[in-house]
Amino acid sequence: MSASPAPDWLSEAVLYQIYPQSFADANGDGIGDLPGITARLDQLAWLGVNTVWLNPIFASPMRDAGYDIADYLRVDPRYGTEQDLVDLVGRAREVGIRVLLDLVAGHTSDQHPWFQHSAADPADERYVWAEADSSGALPPGFVASPGTRVGGYLPNFFDCQPALNFGYARMDPAEPWRLPVDADGPRANRAALREIMDHWLRLGVSGFRVDMAASLVKDDAGHVETGKLWTELRAWLDAEHPRAALLSEWGDPAVSVPAGFHADFFLQFGGPSDGRALRSLWHLNTATIREDQAEEPCYFDAEGRGTAKTFLAAYHETTAAVGGPGRIVLPTANHDFARLHCDPRPAAQLPAAFAFQLTFPTLPAIYYGDEIGMRYVPDLPDTEGSVLGPRYNRAGSRTPMQWDASANAGFSDAAADRLYLPIDPDPDRPEVAGQRADDRSLLHHVRDLIALRREHPEFGVYASLEVLHDGYPLVYLRGGRFLVVVNPTGGAVTWQHGREDLGTVRPVRETGVRVSGTEIVAERFGYGIFEL
Image 1 (cartoon, rainbow, N blue to C red):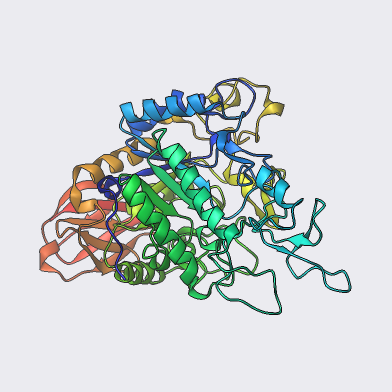
Image 2 (tube, rainbow, N blue to C red):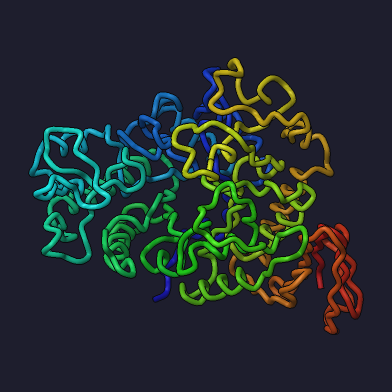
């Protein structure tokens, strides 16, 4: 099944993810906010990104950093007001940036009025409820009711995140709590999603990234019923807001895009191989992957022990499955897994990583701070549910943005002990101001690559890709015009190419790469872009 058309602007998007509480604090309380983001939009416009995705900004008790929503139609006071969001969207539009919000579709906070009502009314079907058996035991996975309603509810992630009831794909007489997808509760929840999306779209946002988008209908083999739900929502979106984009946190574009999403992320989880495609590329640090996920050297391994074949196969298979390119988002990192700069990856490798990400035919998503080489900071406290296991703490990827050399790295005027998370204590930490003043910095490199991508459609999602060499170095042609060479390793590598069309090429951007009539030599962490 081929994907239906996406908004025309999405194919040219360079996304930038902002974790709001860590980006910029305008009111001095130690937590980032919407006015802080607005004040920094000129920097993002200078960088060249044209689409910003904000992690959840809705009212929340913050037991999972805002992914536990208590009111979908109200901005949480820690971030400001609805008018602050309107101002942000308006200013962003003036500088050529669209704003996407994060929609948590599958669950709410246990403090949401919907759940409070459901916990007191045995007839309420908005959540999944089950009664205890004769011994008083609840079914596996259910949590005891906090209200007068007997029995327990099904959470979607943490116990504080009760799953909204979108029904079950299959009925089971042994589990009488299962409701069909067209029952009253599931129908009410589908209608609520439209109301929520419509509210924010009418205030000027350009779409949504949907959290845990595959989680809605339960016991749904192949996500068939969940796919039908999103297809229905997408049809409504196309009719009412045809310029809006719908991106999913699904991790399997081959399934999510035919189901109605315009694009999906390659993630550290998802799909038939549980996120192996992304992890095989550059997810090498173990601080934010599960203990049960197999570890293997990634391609962006400084010792050159990985392979690009796993990622490239997933890219080609997914593109074929959705009927064309342009539907895969490739992130540098996000709030749930380790940054691009994390042990054992050295900072010297980052320019080559960005040279790959910004010339490959996926939609690039830059996680805030990665453009200056902010690192994953280890050994931080559990903050708003950041710890997910003995070695899995997401806080290290959520530290405050490093703007300059002033107190708190320019993030906030608050006392250091009031900050949402500590500033990276490394005295040599990178900062925006210092890198902006240095035209040889990573920040300038990323800005230059974004400009190159936007200038030449051959680097876009629809131009052709021909992989010439999938070892070290990685070599590919874009649009039949540009040759890209990337060496992620800490040593020189050579490829004997034997192609007459590479005999004479003109360097466009080159650091440590030589192309001759017979071979390509790439020095340690070298990269090059050449015009045929």
